[in-house]
Image 1 (cartoon, rainbow, N blue to C red):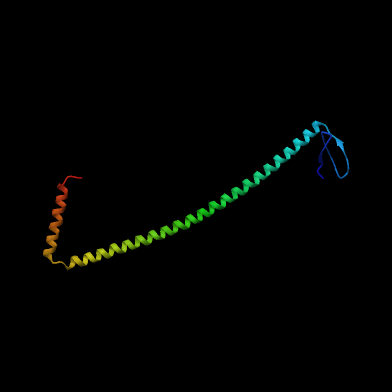
Image 2 (cartoon, rainbow, N blue to C red):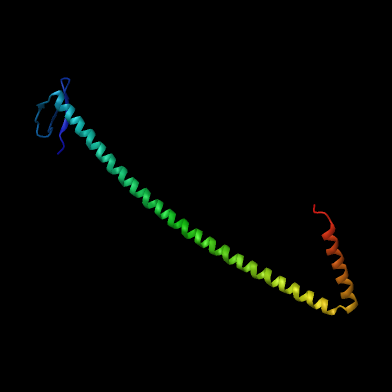
Length: 132
């Protein structure tokens, strides 16, 4: 049983109240008792701080793993979306190119010569214009 601290006649004393023992103590004994109680409180606080720190580290590890998982899933989703958009763009370009080829195949030779001359004139004009 932990001894009880009693104050009697202006002096502190320790003893076992149940046993009815009363032992006068000196100021040094009281100081020693208080120092021991403080040391015990500090040791308890240090153990509690270590437990809290361990819990915080474990929680931080869990949060980090969860965040990495969410990030990996998000990146995988973005990658799949980017691939799908790239495939759609490629199909669109291929379709436009096929339509253009069909359109040019439908042109007569005179129209092709005229269009080629227009393009050549525009390209030549661009080469002689000053840069903006």
